Length: 200
Image 1 (cartoon, rainbow, N blue to C red):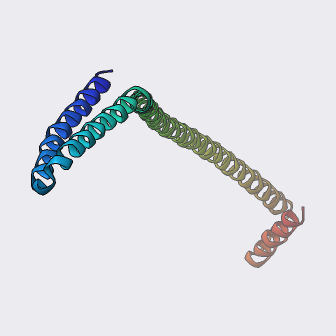
Image 2: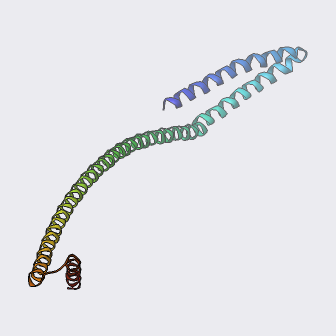
Image 3: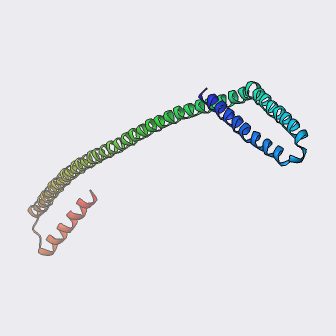
């Protein structure tokens, strides 16, 4: 509405300026044609009155009929632009808020992922330590069992060796007691007895 008033004031100033300029121009034109004074004064003044009257009539029609739709269209266009700017500002603010929200969510997800990775590393380290400890215990148990088995086998071998030595000694003694033998016969009896034991 303020724009309409400004436009009308400007238009009226232009019309007044045009009237102020046209009247002296018309009078100067009339003076220039001084030879036809009797005829020109009446004709030029009446033409000037008709020209000014026509101009004012056209100006009045423009102001009443043509200018209001133009100013209304300009005002509507300005209002549409203001509305579009307001919508754009609102959309920009919402987009900025969503960007901030997504950035915060992304940062939270990154922190959670880092925590999960660290937790996984800690769990893997615990599992590794547990497996190494279990394997170490198992190796120690196998080693202790092997030592026991070796010791038992060694004891059994020594016992077997003692038993055989006793058997050999008893066999040799029994043979010697049963008859007197020479050194070579004695050696032959030992060898024979060892062969018997090896076959058994």
